[in-house]
Image (cartoon, rainbow, N blue to C red):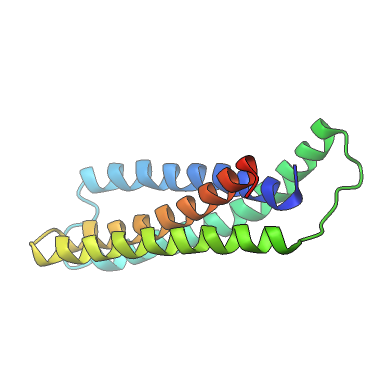
Length: 149
């Protein structure tokens, strides 16, 4: 398993964890009425800033911990960090799929806003569309590595 493939798998795991936690937290706060009134978008903005901060920290810690774990499990004390042309092409394909998915989600979010959906929900749909795009990008990379790119 190449270094890039390991990083992609680690990124998938961390992304699912971070956005799963955020989704549960947001739905609980929304049900409690936390995002109502004139402060709704300000509170939403703060929650997204927390999400970004937690996400960055989780990615760093996840990359370190899971890379060490993969090295121990694979009994590979000196992993190779070489990125070749195949890795670049797989990354490019993943980015294309991810951007298309995120763009489609953002467009659907704008349509939802035009049909009168709650702006707090629409803003979070945009955030989750971007996250889903990143997830699809990474998933495409993992699949391409598995099938031989």
